[in-house]
Length: 289
Image 1: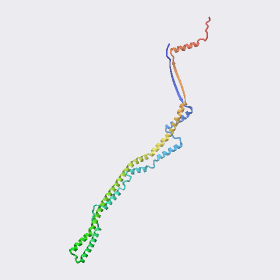
Image 2: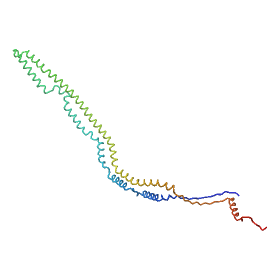
Image 3: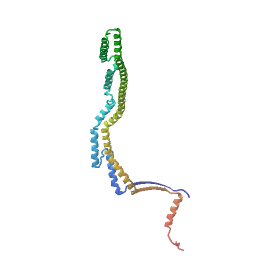
């Protein structure tokens, strides 16, 4: 006889946690279930108070919002850099009004103080020359007239020449002053415009900060509420991570197994033979002979 033996076995096992850790694990799992339902709170009174304060601050909003918004709007409008441009331009126009007639040469030879001076020279020369010729008994003569003309010319010519040179110098100086004043004024205006552009660029950054500040209250409230839920959850996760390995390491493995076995013909024969052998009497057998 021959054959094979086949055994089929089914086993079920269950790990029971380490008994001293079971109560703590059950408590943590219960609290985690509570948090999952949205009812978790921080167990620490100081933490709860701090979170409540953060929530209150968030609800109140930032006290700097209006100031930062005003600053942003001011910078975006140039920050007042060009506020005095009209006054600067007006100063240049006033300066032009004072020097234009001198700069354009219309005052050359038109000095109102020059005529009285020339008249005085003419009278003095006339009196002197005519008096001399009269003393010689030749007043009114052609020589008298010639001498008078030369005398007046010699007296007034240097004065007129000096005044002309002065007027031309004043004209050139006035033109140069107007040119420099124009450059200075335009430089100031350009500088003001550049500052205004810079302020506008800065205003974009301040505007962004102002928007963030405006949302500060809502963000602070969200952060506070995140901590309200996160602190206990983090604590439970930490405790669970510490206790679970201990509970698993020292836990008890309980299991049951059931099985069926199918014997081959040879195994069956051997089993039967072994049974018969157990019935056979021990020792010598006597058959009455």
